[in-house]
Image (spheres, rainbow, N blue to C red):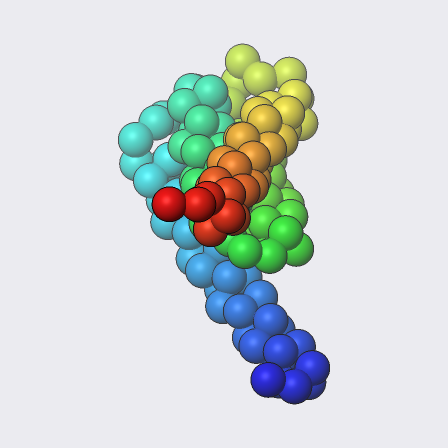
Length: 123
């Protein structure tokens, strides 16, 4: 396989992951709105953060993870936490997204390391 073909495959994979991430954020937004009222921003942020963590564990490109998480945070701050009266600032919930993404990427890294380790074992 040539270098150009490999770069093209990675670019196509990144585009697919970005589209999947945008769709997942839209579905998570609908789920959060249906499951939790506007007065419960904690439940809404947990739905969005769990989706971001799962996507981080599934995505193979870290750029797709960062873009998807940024979109999810923007949707949460701009739309989901907008009508929450007890919330002084919606930006205070953003560390939850960071923790979820770090856990998801860590899970992916551990799975990759275990696969690599299994290949080096002797029978």
